[in-house]
Image 1 (spheres, helix red, strand yellow):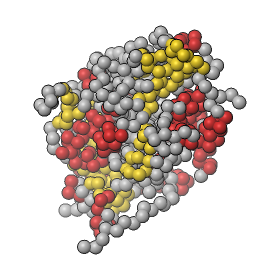
Image 2 (image 1 turned 135 degrees about the vertical axis):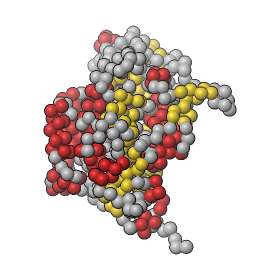
Image 3 (image 1 turned 45 degrees about the vertical axis):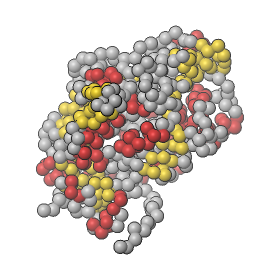
Length: 300
Length: 276
């Protein structure tokens, strides 16, 4: 059975109200188009997990999709804070669970490898550890000293944007790699959005670059420019002015409502969104190619 | 020519760098970036750059930029290992020198980047006076690295407090089992060390008087016996900062907030875009 879905069908089939979603990506490859589709389909009560939430989670919280965030650092990179997530937390309207980066990573690694929990060194944030009941202490059975443990994080759905994959979902990422692999292995369902679907011979020509194997992938969605306003290395650049504008937009509920009406509810899909951005923006976000040197795998 | 507080901070941070150091870098810390580049141009040509964000190790620096803030990692990295391996392997094994920007710091150099408000963690629902972005890797790395430094671009009683609302960065604490507490704190007013684990003013920047520093510090100021005026950068160092490393003045962003910061950010973006 083919795994290739239109993005709207993949979201409709695999993302349910109340799900724990891990929309991965790290500075680039953030699956904005998938988040927008979730908003359009009016999912509710989601738990949004990611080590480093950015504008996408701000938009999903603004649209009323979320009841909780799980994170270790959140911000509008280089610009300031996530105004909406921050305001909702400050007002007590949004639940949150906070970790250090290593706490978040340990939870994902446990989830990805099928362990019930992961031991880690106590952090400096004793106050956070005390109030978050997911942080527990046990005695290291080998040396008798206390260690901190955190439970496996097992998302219902991981959404990962990649540069290219084949139709089975064997997915290749290059550049800054976040926690996509761990999120995908930890999740029950995996949705891949991709800039290109390529023949599997291209994937096989450089298998070391395959981060996510197709056998854990449930849906493959061809979504060029999925990551805008973040970027996809080698395909298009980050739209820096969007991040500055969002800092203004997110100051009032009215301007956020207008943004969502125009750019999320007002477009059918990512293709329409990208066309709506216009040629000047397309031109501005073009990147100059810089090819890696070809390596020789040899013929055996 | 008048020397500005941002330039004093850059030179003071650069003076803490030794040749051969492995230094770590955040994404939006241009004062520190400028200082690393200055050190590399002057007395520390053999620096290794690393970060949890870049997830790699670089030897070739990238020019300072807002539009290409990650260029250090995108086209110069020697290795790109991913977030998980960077946090689990690279940072614990290399133990890089790092400069952190605390939202609150106590006299022992413990610090807070979670939220303002004592009751944030104890009440439900958790309401905060001010929710901060979170701590990232600070609670992890401050428990094991030996070269922790702090920097505060806007010295005030909001930041320098007798008691933290929440602790998320380890200073000179009795709880410490490995690594070391901060070696120094550099602010826009002066430079502090930690004598017997307590913050102490070592030097004040030119034009800043001690009553001003005390007024803006939320606990009694301790003075080093050798207290002196912070030595000025040389004309050559100034020239490197202003004309070579950071002609767009990106470093100044960290000393501004609100509309002033936004205005400078837009100006830099426009200038960078017109140069492309």
